[in-house]
Image 1 (cartoon, rainbow, N blue to C red):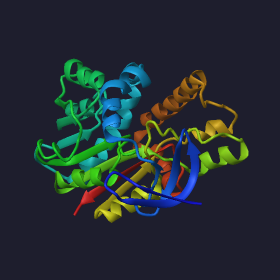
Image 2 (cartoon, rainbow, N blue to C red):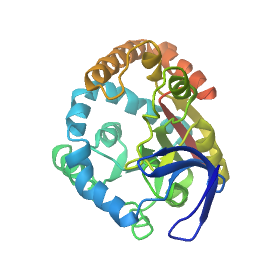
Image 3 (cartoon, rainbow, N blue to C red):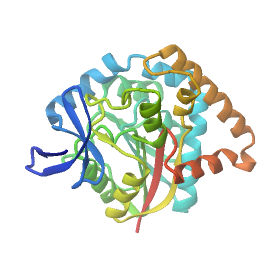
Image 4 (cartoon, rainbow, N blue to C red):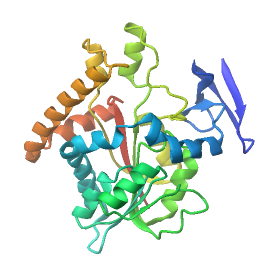
Length: 309
């Protein structure tokens, strides 16, 4: 069965219904060429949620958990900067814009490497922490048509776990591309949803589609749909990778769905393993494994870097 829905701009979204949850359908949209919910959430309600409620109600321990895992996050962040510096080859000051910068640890990693960093963060608690505690250059606003040209041009625009939340991810990427310097990079990290391991868990373990959360996640990307989106926007894909496939724990009998205790346990195991990988960085075995997993669509999160040409 196909679903047809017009958004506020009277654009017709049509596609096969994959699942219905909490009053929303997730469709395989033929127009957008990625999965998203219909009906779309009202933009004013969404902005209010991310400005006033996200950190206060939904993710009370978000900043504290990032602080606890700071050493591991530094490994993740610095791996990205390694690739940025490989592809932009800039001898001058390198400038990065982080859209949805959260508590600011990604920007702090860049600042410590000598980058000129700017973050955009609508959530007040994360904005205050990154500005007051980390002394970062953060703007408490949304990246939108009214403001996106106010901050200059950048070597890199970074969006980590952002595109799944926004009502028009295509327009978001168009704006990101427009504020890039020549040969600049757009880097997107997004949940790798409806991936083969998740589908296995639904089919063989009778799990619900636990990753579908319409109140927060409007869009559901995977490696193919993000790759196609970059190509569609004339962003030349220069690098793709993924993160550890946490669903493997589920298939091994560690049911972390809705169980924060088990969730913390498996996250700790993943961190320990990746710290060991980091100690043997000369072999770069971690990235070699994860890059191969990305080729077959496996991994909890997918990262893609595209270059403006």
